[in-house]
Length: 495
Image (cartoon, rainbow, N blue to C red; front, side):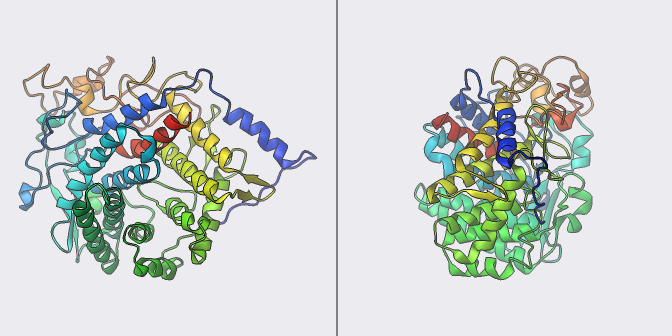
């Protein structure tokens, strides 16, 4: 998408207008925030989302084993992995994206995590272990466990669930290049994390990533076409599968260092629409991430043949600067990035992660981003990313944290089955499908604190209904937290 030209009427220079906007959106925080504490909690959240048999060192004690027979109806072992949000379905598409972003967070910011690095790696491995199970059969990727309609008709904790655990897969006759491409990206990115930590596991991940990518590329198509009734409207791929093929190739290029992936990227840049919707990044759209990730090599002076990706990345950065009229990016009165659709915090954390990552790449190359009449320095990009993190932690019009368990005031009634229904320890007897509705409708705070969960967040006017039925605002997701891990790691070391 072409970036709109900038224009500022009047006699004042554009830089003056921009400086004013910075005062509005990047105002200094009084007292600061404990980014390390927030980092610890953001990683701990993933333990509350675990499916399967929990390990002895499980720290979220109100959770118990769940979904121990997943995959049995298809004759495979699909136990483990993560519940994506406040329900009990295992959706492979967002789980793979979560894994990729956890890996990227560790690759770029692991050195800033201190003792939390071990927990971050464990959070990622809980997912990669599952993805290896889901891709163990050649020519098949198991992409979902659980019937979403059955699950969403109940309000029950995962330990009790008796809803349909239907297994959904893609194969040669039912393609899903989007979810397979993202899965390949996740496995490849994770292989980099384990390259020196566990070389054998790293090789397993990379070899599997190659096979899954080849399958995705050879049998092209969207999984939301093959499995429409199962995955839509929940994680329907609206954006198309082309970006996931490029995304997978980029991570394989980084992980394998093989020329074939560089050639694939160059050859398919136009065919797979690398320049489309360059200001989007999330589980459904990888364009901005592709451009930022590849641009690192251009900025290091190693890959002039990727120059067009850097131009796209620069355009993405310019589209995010406050004060620029862009149809898909706006800011709330309190300074929060806001994009139309549900669960806005997913956009806040993922776009802020790219701002921070790109600022680091620019810093090492001693470069800035040209945005028509102005330029954006690495320091400015870091400031903008930090402003978003601070908003999440409490620097906002309501003066509340949007991370459960962080700060004096945070969401109490999050849209999350396990958190809102009494734990097995407190209430050993089973709580059935409809029996849980009383907890869903209760005005009381959730009895189980899902520490570290970041909810969908306030609306465009900075208003937040702390109420379970408002799921777009009150539901946490793994893909909100995954990029936030990297952000908090950096700012814990550079407050």
